[in-house]
Length: 352
Image 1 (cartoon, one colour):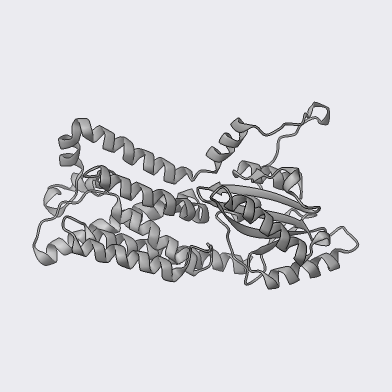
Image 2 (cartoon, rainbow, N blue to C red):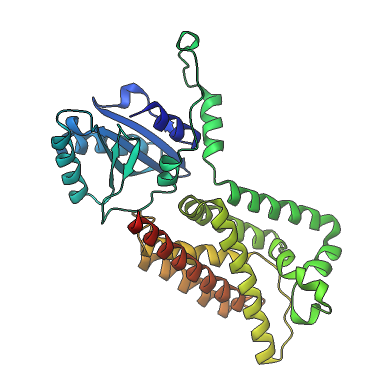
């Protein structure tokens, strides 16, 4: 590994495991996501053996399982073009990639990541972190360098840096607005809720946005924010914060417009509040990311996500006072956004 790469991983929120947990030629970085730990293993291709890797993964998985966490592994084979045995290294690296779709290659001499065809294209935002050459370590006089031992404060700081910033901000705004509603509830609901009957002038289209931050009660906001955080954490890491925010609001807006369409068709006036349409959009985008293999995991499987969505929509239609068409509109919008995003990313990767 290079100092530049290690610095980018550090800035991206990854924590390096202690030396005691490493095998010779193995360097391990972890990104802690609630019960899931993204474990990235950088391996000197000259040191790789299938048996050593198997034992290493068993040990790490066992250690994490003992504290209630699951490990999700990505292998990165490090090769050096300046080494006389470069071709032997590449042979090993390519063989590992052919046996494991969760494996990439890192060219140390050129500071370049190579993702062979057929491999997972993204790993919770890690590819963006590695390929972001704008992040460079500060120049430090070697004589001024002092060893720093990781402490609790550093671990907390690293965890905060690794949090999905856009998702956390959206959740925080929703919670803040909900608290304000306990003091100014009638005013905020009257001015912020959405429905065709409430939009009396062109200046009131803002309600489509404000309604996404209002919730009827504690159960309403708790369910939405819990789902948003856990699904949003994975989706944002895969898409990046800007694309995630764009997708989120696009889904919420589309959910409102489908609700308007249902009002016109049925002739029934509907007043809607809640982030559910946008949250369903996050789930739709996540479904697209999993289907296009930009996100993988033992619990992230297309049939499982479809089943969860189907049960959620079915449950909504069995209950009253649920904005079902907002859910469906947001879901479809998020799915379409996610599919387009994956297609564009795949096309860019092929051109590269």
